[in-house]
Length: 119
Image (tube, rainbow, N blue to C red):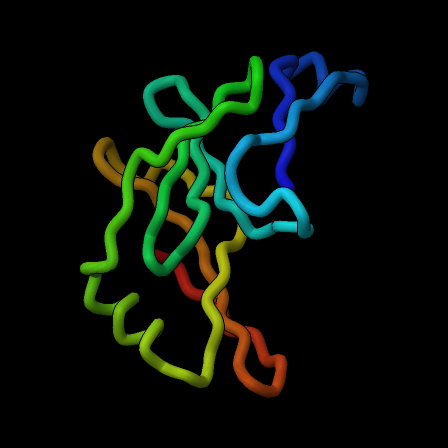
């Protein structure tokens, strides 16, 4: 479950605010590892690394819509096809250049070991 608050900077300064549940994802279990970033003034999240799924969220009511989904990036395909790891998001994406963001992901192997990657 993910929540969003429209107050932004005042919320960060006072730690007081009202959040609304983002209306996508699994409502009945805890969720984490969503990768947040702002694109064209709107908050987006990478909801899934593979398939790569990007959602836009509206702070006023938690409504969200899928903005992008693909499973055609060869390095992620190869990693996802490995039965020995699970892929998760990690941290916030940052603008890398005008047309790209840089984000982190991590894998968890069958023994609980973590490996982090930039993508």
